[in-house]
Amino acid sequence: MPLGLLALVAVGVHAAADTLDDRLLSWVDRADAAFDGWVGHYDLTAPMVEWVSLELRTRIARVLALTWELAADLVLALPALGYREAAAARPAEAWRVAMEGPKEQPSWRALWLRCVRKPTPMRWLRPLATGAVVVAGACAVARLLQGTVYLSWRELMGDRVADWGARGLALGALVGVLSTLGWRAVLRNLQHADTACAQETGRGAFTRGLLGCVVVVPLAVAAALEASPLWSFLR
Image 1 (cartoon, rainbow, N blue to C red):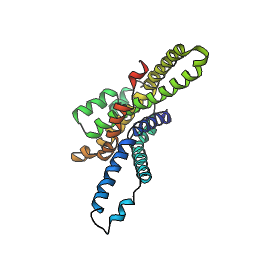
Image 2: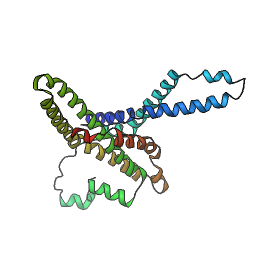
Image 3: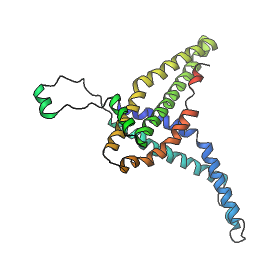
């Protein structure tokens, strides 16, 4: 199960990072244009205008995208390895409860109540970012299945039957991935964020994990807006 959660988050992060390649290249082009404009004012530095070619700018953009993706994997996917299924609670003896006290189970309700009562960026942004990323990952899996089924069924059953069959199986895969792995990935990141923030007090709890949130939030927005074509399976 932990490896499945890690794989789903990694696929979603990769799908989101793919949508940012062109934007990163445009930012690199703007930085290069600003650099060229600055060094081009002086005869001594004018030859430096040719230092950064289009090929080099493309490589820089790809390296930035890969670095961003790996950093997001470290923040969102790595905690998934700590996921463990809890056994069903057993009735405790009265004397053990009196001696040790009741043990709190980290349920959804308890975690969300702490998010509301003790809000921090990590408690809110990490699970929300994970949710956006796992939806993008599930969409990527569903699209792969849809394309594979359509191409293999088209000659045998015709375009219409192959199209509807591929869409149906893709929707089934999408729902299946989200219902088995998606919510668990969100829960695990919520648990991880809650545990990390609980170890800090005051300002430390608010700033805990802030850098990781800065890394994953833009990718989460890209995943939600551009890497999660949910309506495409119905049109």
